[in-house]
Every structure is written in structure tokens, then in C-alpha cells.
Image (cartoon, rainbow, N blue to C red; front, side):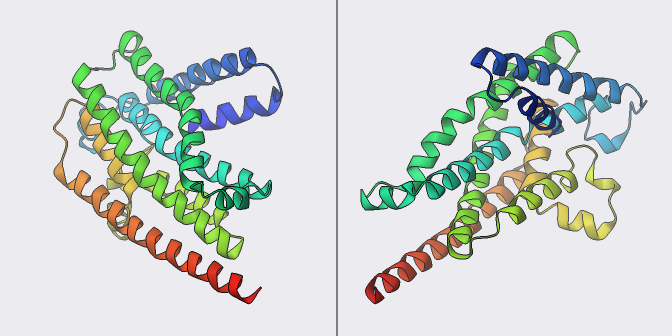
Length: 262
């Protein structure tokens, strides 16, 4: 999202610097993220608008849209990144030979990497609550974190499917990244899906990104979490898990057949 762009930009400038520089870059990108959202929202007068899911200001709407997908999207990206690392370094075959689960290995690596995005999200929430009049309660934060955990699992399954497709065809990752970006936009990260044409809105409501955004906005706006959002995410999780099992089984059988031929 916006913070990703800032972080990537400054990382390119200060690549190879110390951990202190990385912390400074991270903090600066967070402040810029808040500033961009806040001053953009101040350019509009949308109080009372029914389009913004109960929020009294566009700032609150955009703020939740900014942070709701950061952790699951980052975790999925890191899973793929670590998968590519072990594959390009020929470590993938080593793990298989040692009978170590490659998925468990990349999961453990990605969990360490998600500390920064998680800290960024909490910082933005609490900073906005203290200084920018963003309403926040302990219950809403805990519920939001639980939804984020659910979202991380769903996005992780999408990433694992992308890695299996890449193992078979040596392509598909760019399509995965493109889908994530487009789905975040049409899912309502920066504007409500009600403004879309009917055909696009009917597609959007079934996306997991849309449901994560909608659920997060309900929670952080002090409203009750709708069962339909969780149900849609759960259906996505079952669907993606079945696809992963099928592709994983197919890939293993294919590897066994190739081993017999050698």
C-alpha cells in the first residue's frame, strides 16, 4: 500500500545500510503514510456520507484501508520471497533430501519478517488514536488482530499455491502480485466498492481482500463484525486449501514419475 511504496523507495536509496538506518527508514515511512492519508482526507468534506461504512471522516476510512491488508499481503510476499531464495540457492532440494518441510521452513522465516509490518500497523493505529482523534478501544484492537491472523492464513494459502505453480511451470508469480494489487484496489482500499459499476461490484464482494477490508472497518468503527465476512473468508480458505492439496499431490506424483525414469 502507500507505506509499501515509501519503504521500498527509501530502501533503494539506503540499501546496504545498518539496522539503525532501516529503523529510521521504517519510522519515516510510517509518518509519511499517515501524513498522506490525513491531508488527502482533509481535502474532502464527506461527513454524513453513507458510502464510507459509518465513518464520520474520509481519513478514518482511508486509514483502515491502508493498514488492513499490510500484514497479510506482506506475509504472502515474504513466503514467496523465501521460497525463491531457497530454490535459487539449490537449498530446496537439500531440505527435501533431509525430509524437512519446505513450507514450515519458509513459514518460520516469514514470521520473523512480519514483525516490522505488524509493528507498523500498531504504530499507525495508536498514533492516529492519540493525536488524530481516531476512535480506538482495546476490544476493537484485539478483534482486528484476530481477523488479521485469519487473513494471513488465507493469503498464505494463495502464496503457497503460487509457489507450486511456479515449481511446475517456472512462471506465475508476476500474475500473483498483479492480482494482489488489483484486488486490493477493487476491494475498496481507497474508496468504497459502492462507487463501482454493478458488474465490478458483484465481482468485488466475493474477493477475500474486500472482506478483510470490510471486516476491519466494521471492527475499528465500533460496529459488530458481520458473519458474512467471516463466512466468505472461511469458504476461501477451504477452497484454497483444496487447490493446494490437489496441486501438491499432483506435483509429488510427477516428481516420483520423473525419478523412476532417471
